[in-house]
Image 1 (cartoon, one colour):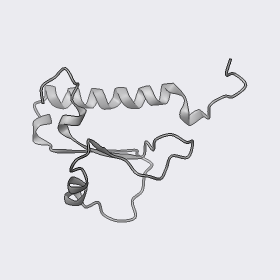
Image 2: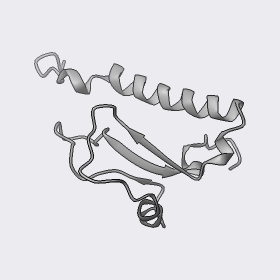
Image 3: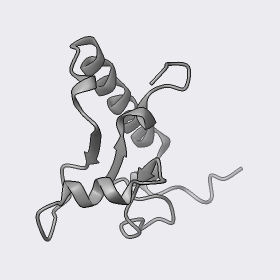
Length: 100
């Protein structure tokens, strides 16, 4: 029984599942509209995220060499992964059962 150790409100499973479902829904919508193939790089950013400088997409693309996803090392206040920002290439967000 873990009820004596409640999770912080921002770490509840419902928030994670909603964020995941939203990204799946976006991918499906882009595929249905024939727009998915137009993009090589995908950035997922929380609406409350502020950047200190303009993003360099070419640099992000270079940093993805040899990686499926990039996530910041900061912003994981509750000991988990940061959900503020991630970058990935299109094949990494396709379901494994689907050819890239």
